[in-house]
Amino acid sequence: MTTKKQIIRRISKVRKEQNLTTTQAADKASISQPSWWRVENGKVDPTYRLLFTMLDALKIKWSIELKD
Image (cartoon, rainbow, N blue to C red; front, side, top):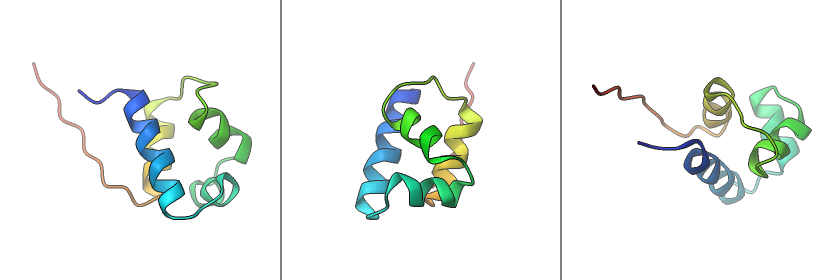
């Protein structure tokens, strides 16, 4: 199972690979730059909904798999 920390690390890595600032990435996600920064720097425990919004803004493909 992928943890929130792993998702956040991936978001940060891809943002940097795309040469985007946190401000630019936040604009793409329609969230505030301080919110983006707090997520990337572990200052908040983001909802999965927020993480999915960030993934979508960076065009990172994701899926959810539920298992018993």
